[in-house]
Image (cartoon, rainbow, N blue to C red; front, side, top):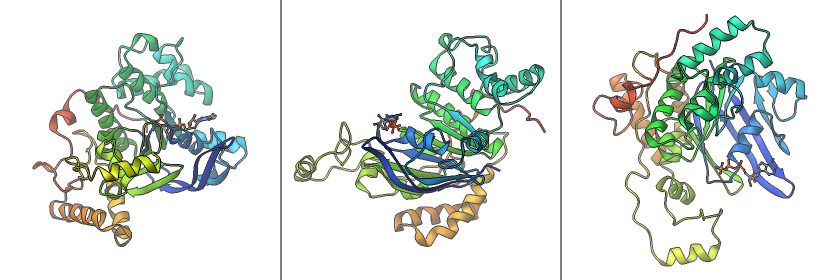
Length: 358
Ligand SMILES: Nc1ncnc2c1ncn2[C@@H]1O[C@H](COP(=O)(O)OP(=O)(O)OP(=O)(O)O)[C@@H](O)[C@H]1O
């Protein structure tokens, strides 16, 4: 099972610029979480702080008993082996073949023989559907393929926590759906804890168990997906609706005068589906169900009394549907087959997982 990440009172500044302060949240083990936020709100900085690549000013990040914010560098380096990191551009070395890029962490961090490295690398290459491209340079393949190569590299050390920084950037909507499906499938197979940073509303609505949002140097909210998806916080509504009206401006927040002018213009019609809790993606056919779903159901049942009414109603409807159908993923408005993803997205194209090492 994946490992929990406990973030307590985390604050980070660069010089006099506070990026965010007093961020507290818990990534439950094996669950998928998404962190949303307008550009420049410090989502990438947050990922780097979790993995100990940036030291925060205050607070703790507990991973498997190690405080990634305050421990000696040697302990952080060891704990970092629990992580797989997928950066925005895949962060591949341009002069190395895909094979060598993906083999890099194994050659750096382990003493495995080349034959063993080849076996692991080819298994991951198959996993992300890149067989045949292993000899190519990153500059010779598409952006989507680079992402998948980055993901393969993130997986070679069998991570228990996977951090993905905007996995959708530069991808068309169809490739984004395939990548989302790949992440859900990975979670079903590995039961790893996953945190995805993204602006992409489709990923945000369909992939995670939990969602949070950073804005104006603070964590607006973090919790079960239903909380954010039904939230009436102006910044959340604006973001999920992709609207210009609201506190988010072109560079960051709007000033009071701009907000007053918008208020005078009257309320905007709500965008269709802006606050709808849509079905969550399920693993591809032939893969095990995600173990995290069962655990999460029990966890969220215990949280029900703490949730805002709209979120509570959405969770209760979800739990009722699951109890009725024993279809663990059914949520309000689910399609008739009770599955979260249209069959075309679920069944087409994606590679299946190879058999993993015992
Ligand atoms: N090493 C650094 N030194 C100084 N400032 C930094 C450093 N890294 C990031 N920043 C600043 O921190 C702020 C947040 O950057 P970050 O990349 O985390 O935002 P983001 O939310 O991921 O944005 P986007 O969605 O556009 O990728 C920015 O103002 C950026 O300039």
